[in-house]
Image 1 (tube, rainbow, N blue to C red):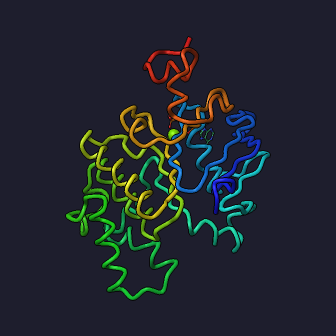
Image 2: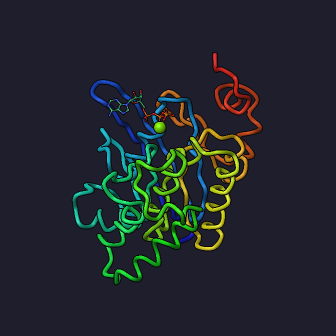
Length: 249
Ligand SMILES: Nc1ncnc2c1ncn2[C@@H]1O[C@H](COP(=O)(O)OP(=O)(O)OP(=O)(O)O)[C@@H](O)[C@H]1O
Ligand SMILES: [Mg+2]
């Protein structure tokens, strides 16, 4: 796949909750091996955009393509085949409380592969060490801190070695050192495996470190779509205010 073939494309996406229009014609194209950061104020629709891209929300209109194929209906075999190649770290972690961390991480492998239990276990241990949580193997989600829960959910999102990873605020609730470790992990996955990452984050340090390109949402529209370095050159308006941590008037 060349950079002229986006791995994710969103065309004129309109998403409503009842009468409320949250996304009002959003466009985006993400190239393979890109790290794209989605920015915007709280409640502007970042999570809604991620959930629409992975087929969890049906848009009112517009198109979403993953790996060049249009997502129609996530219940269909064709779409679930595509979505198997997508890892998602949800904003709230969304681990199953009745399973241990190891069982949570093993879940996608058990559902989607025929690997022997010993191999599954080896992969689970590797994924947990990748997110610096080997000690949480036998714990239940209720016994973890918020940051640990988030990292366990990331290990689960990475279980099937997805070429495309979505992370909704992966650093929220993490201490600065763990958060920096997570940034390094994402950069390493991109460098070694060529993974494409779409991440929602407010953390300025993270953005500076990992972002190739920015998609800035404002009032349901794409206010900025381009290189991080170009976003930083903007002198006023909501994008500049965001980086200056200033309230937009
Ligand atoms: N299931 C839902 N039903 C109705 N309204 C919703 C639903 N989910 C989100 N909304 C509304 O849509 C808007 C966008 O929400 P969304 O969660 O996408 O924002 P966000 O940009 O991710 O915010 P944050 O930075 O706080 O996570 C908000 O006004 C929210 O109240
Ligand atoms: Mg959100």
